[in-house]
Length: 248
Image 1 (cartoon, one colour):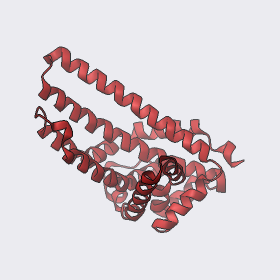
Image 2 (cartoon, one colour):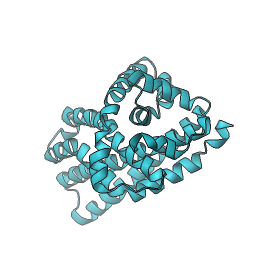
Image 3 (spheres, rainbow, N blue to C red):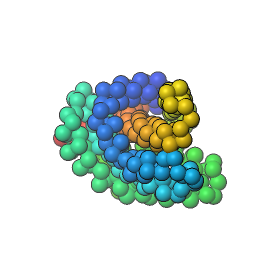
């Protein structure tokens, strides 16, 4: 019964609608999160060996962690949108970011455990990633603690993990396709406008990566929040007003 009610089409369409409606505040938040690596990459534009510099990679890892914390604010706004209430710009950055404390420990714990699982073998990391897909929304909304959030996420995804895994695969392939199209269009425009200036190509690459990363992280945060709602509705019959009541 639960598996039939958790429909990928509904999750995806609802996520796209919420993302489109809130693209400005969500985009601003994640552009700020990803700004350090983007600015650093721009300073390396045109320099020999810039693609081998470890600074960008180090900053990107830190930003991915910060992005999980920022997902708390997106979770708050997404839950409000699901109940039919639009969150203002000020409320998103005020009350939304105030929820981020609940996500810090679960983000750090899940990141460490996923890294260890990936080092051990790729397959376990994919299984755990699927099981913990909604750990951040659980941490923000239910606030059971870090380890309990991971267990709760595993409980909610149980019975629908193949569907959740399919959702994750669709999301990452879509993100890859959008990123590729965006990059090709940008580079083609620069090539015809200015030839083969290496510095301009490096700058374009940094800007394209910055924009794409912000969109990717915002979309993932919305998708996990919407997934959480539909998983709870499917397994427990809980309505969105009951879920959102924690923020009232």
